[in-house]
Length: 114
Ligand SMILES: [Zn+2]
Ligand SMILES: [Zn+2]
Image (cartoon, rainbow, N blue to C red; front, side, top):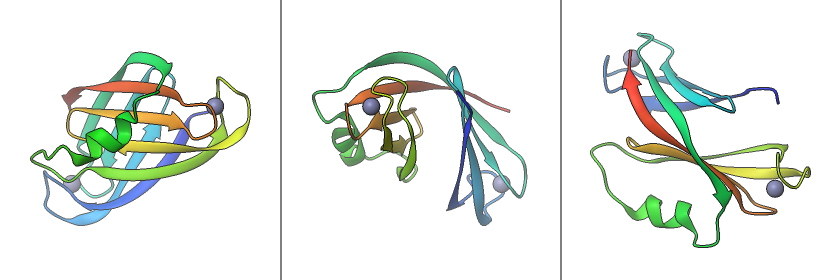
C-alpha cells in the first residue's frame, strides 16, 4: 500500500505558528510534522478491526488539551478493496482511520515527539 499524505492547517503546539501540518499515514505508523519547525509526532499501529460503535464520533466529543482534527481521504480500502472515503480523526492520544464503506478501522496510538 502506498502511504497517504495529507495536510491540515493548524497552530503548532511547539512553534505557535498556524501552518500546514503534514500527515503521513503508513500501515505501521503515522507521523504528523509541522512544516515550519519540523517537530514530529509519531503514532504506532495498535489495533485493526471493523468498527461497529461509531468510535470516531465518540472520540470527537472527548475534549483534550488540543483540538481534535477531522479529515477524510479517498483511497482503496485494505479490507473491502473499494475506492472509498476514509474518515480520519487525529487527537493527542491517537489516530483513527475508518472506511466509510465497510467500517474497517485502524487505530494508531500516540508514541512520541521528536
Ligand atoms: Zn511548529
Ligand atoms: Zn472498506
